Length: 345
Image 1: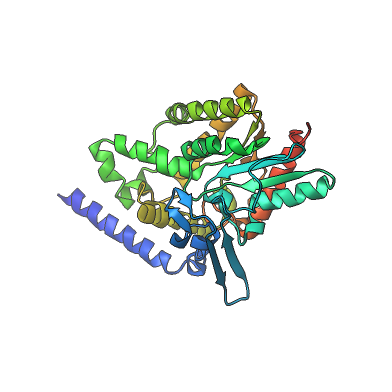
Image 2: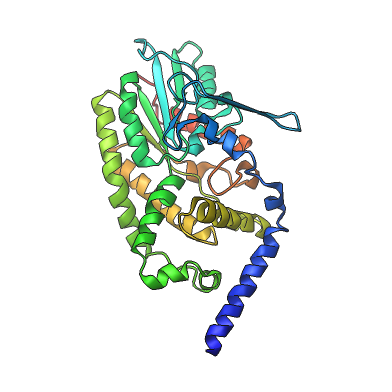
């Protein structure tokens, strides 16, 4: 009885500490994600079916007090990209970028990573007829992207750049893990004290994580690769951004923990992690699984995880870039396309 009371007191004290820190952390007070519904094209006014498809020709604008302007325009085909012809001209090199909110995100359509990659490619190849189209849709994971890729084949892409990570883990892997939890883990995951004292107890061993992720990802990626190849297109996989906690201050680490706890755990309602570490641990394995697939299938891999700078100002939470970070990612993806000689034909 005494142990139970002591545990209850410890849980209450820990939750009180988190409550106080939530209201003192400078990054939480800045509310770095305050305009995410617009910049990530997630506002309800933009959707035909929320989380599934955008409303054609939808638009949303937001003027901020500092003079900054946020603007989302969905084109006549239902994508946050410029208008384009369905029938691809013979000499046009068409690149389609697929992914979730981390692909569609940007202050304006012209400041998403696909648009910035196109700008860089046009500067590099001024005489080349090319375009980079943003087919990102917020909340999309790999399975959604495979279905979207199939619908996109009529546009005859030459390259399909796939960038996924967080949605695959939170909406698929962690939900699967939670459903398989025994009763004691279902209770334990709700305890702040348990997660602090036993931070690794809720996840399987690394090799089991790898096996589970391979079983979930490889069939979809294999199918996507084969379908694109049969249509004369090539798949390009980009590894997913992962913050390095060792590079951060305690306040910055706490902000990422807050993002995991409040956004993914409470608002989205996937799994109630109170720290970012479990997500980052699984994400490291996820990126290794992507690299393994690329090696085995001879698929070009742009290793964004390993090349992206660790500057905290370049991202606004555990997976979304700031506008400066979007530009940085675009530069690295552009360089990866050149290094892999993917524009030669």
